[in-house]
Image (cartoon, rainbow, N blue to C red; front, side):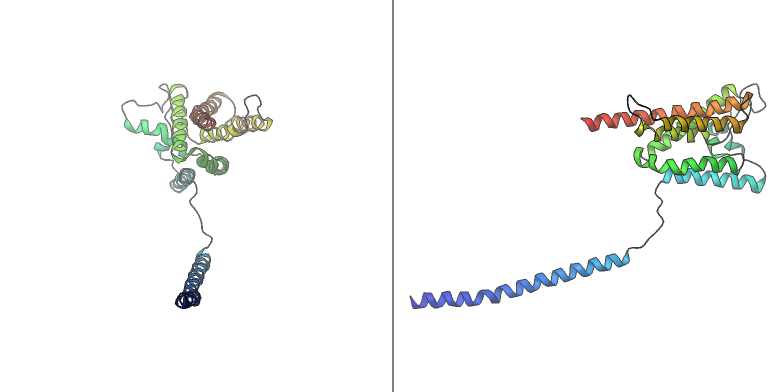
Amino acid sequence: MKKETENQIALFNDEPQNIAPVEEKKEQKQKKTTAKKTTTKKKEHIGIVFNAPVTLTFSLTCIAVIIIKQNLNLLPVIFTAPGCQTSEFAFNWKDPVHYIRLFMHVFGHTDWNQLSGNLAFILLLGPALEDKFGSGLLALMITITAFVTGIINVCFIPSLLMGASGTVFMMILLSSYTTIDKTKIPLTFILVCLTYIGKEFLSQGGEGVSAVTTVAHIAGGICGSILGFMAAAASGKRSKK
């Protein structure tokens, strides 16, 4: 009995000695983790982020094209869409460059006023749309808008076509999709559309070829936005399931 009690006392006396090193190790680990956190916090700094690659690349390309135009006093032909068959700028079905021009004309602008007006909308709406639909889908919608606008110009308009007005109108339509209910349409959306369309007609003169050009931009924007509406509707059905 005396031996058992002595053994128990010895074990009881040994326990604090074994626990103490474990607690010291835990404290050391905590100190190391806190030290790492403080060092990582110190390394954090404010920087510029390329947050919307499609929107920014599109905008920078437009700026580069107009700078080239001003320095050379000439807009490269590839940044204009050809006209109809009865014009001097008629589309040449045998020239591969003319097919490229059906897409590239959105980067060309007449002056800084037209470009700044378009970029104000593109840089404001583009990042939010790119975040919502993804860079690939937004690039596809811009491509469809450019192609439809170019085809309308080739079929009906005798003059050259340039500018991203159709892309801007497409972005206005897509940005309003989240605010439109099945039974209600916001008055602000209607006013924005009417204001932009009215501005385009007034800036183009609103008569003859200029009016048809504005209609081409609007039609291209509508066609480009349809893909976005379909994608948003499909994602909404998946989320409900």
